[in-house]
Length: 279
Image (cartoon, rainbow, N blue to C red; front, side, top):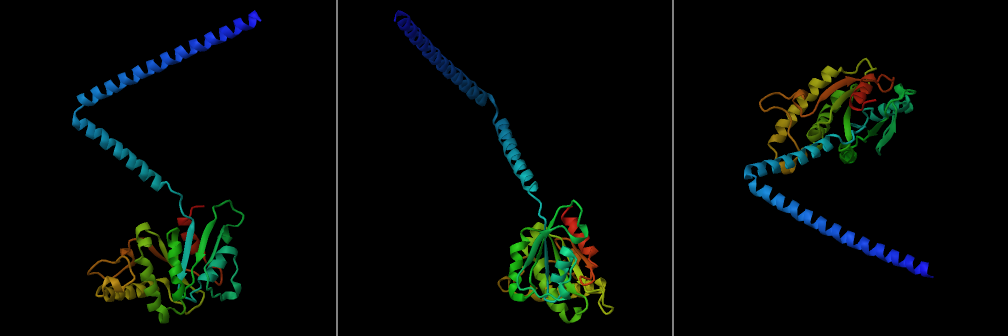
């Protein structure tokens, strides 16, 4: 029993000693904190205002730089959007790129076709898949295009090279609306104008189509300049005042290519896709 009492007394003594040490430690820490505070105040008093402002500016610039780096390091898009008039062959091109099929050569889509896959020509290769979205060409369904442009790495505008002249004005109007969209301009989304159905001997060349589209867009620029901003749908202007319009004047890169979705000649489209969605 005596041993037990002695043991308890030792424990209590140890606890008291620990409390004293802790209090001493807190007091010491408090004293050190006060000393640091005094030193900091002294340094601030002795530091010229110019140096303080410089330090603050450096801090702000550092924060801004880190934000910019994070912005540019954001995940790159792997979405390519297809647009164009109804009947231009967008959907056949979509299936040709996906699995090499044509779906009997005529497909009219009323809902967006989309899928994430490795291009048919790259089957068996270890490459990054692409997300393709085929937006219907019907005028009432075109607003769906805006839903996908914010995530687009590139846009493919498909033109019917066989029946181009009867549809030239309509194609130019649709293309003009695309090229003046804020999402296209701000993100500098590259656009590829694909002249489809070139397997036909009477199909127009990409050079002819380029010139005709530029002429029609130039007319649109002139006609819409005199209309109030409230009456037009374009969000940005394109071209150079006093000069005939050319695609080289656009805010983003615009190129042309020829293809035949029906026969599988889509290599130029594949090159555009892989230029903007790296394997």
